[in-house]
Image (cartoon, rainbow, N blue to C red; front, top):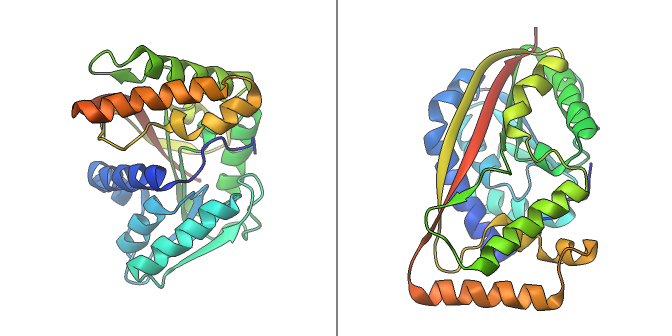
Length: 266
C-alpha cells in the first residue's frame, strides 16, 4: 500500500468517532443488505483506529466475529483501546497489508473496505479489491466506501488559509498517484475484480467542523511537509486560521460526496 498520510491524534479520534456514528445511522439498511447482521464473519481491511469496527462488531452480535487488519501499529493500538472500552469480545486485530492480509481465502461473509482506496494508486486499488474478493465466501459481499476527493465543499467561504490547506493536501495525494476519485469508481473496481455489483449508494454527508475538530488535510500536515507541499510557516498559518475559526464560535459545515458499493462474489 501507499504510505498512509493521516496520523492519529485526539482531535482525529474525535472526528473518526463522529463519522462512525454518522455511518452507523446513515447506512443501517445498507449494512443489512450487505450481510452485516448477527452471526456474520466480517473482515475489516484498513480498519484504522477501529471506530467503525466497533460499530460493526456490535451489529453482528450475537454469534458474529470481526477481524480488523491495518498496517499502522499506532492505529491498531488505538483500535485495541476502543475495543476494550466497548467491552467487545468478538473483535480481533491483526497487522497486515490490504493487498496481502494473511487471512484464509473464502472465510468472509463480508469484507469491509472504508476510505482506504483513495489513499492508494489505481493499480493498488485493483489489487486490494481483488484480494478482498478472494477472502469472500461464494455469495459473500464486499462493502466498500470512499469519497470523491475533488468535490468536497464548504457551506460558507472559509478562511483562505483553510482552502489552501485542502488544495495542498489534494496536490500531495495527486503527486503520490493516489486514486482521488475512488468513490465514483468503486463499481468499476468491483466489476473488474469479477464481483457482481448489487447496489450503488451515493450520498452527500454534512460534516460539522465543531470547534477543535479538524478536516483530514490537517492530519496530513507532517506528510505534506515531508513531501514538499508545506512548510512549518504554512502549518503555523493554517493553525492560526483554525484558532480564529474556533474563537468565532461559528461551525464550519463541510459537505462530502460519499459513495458506497455492495458487490457479491458469485
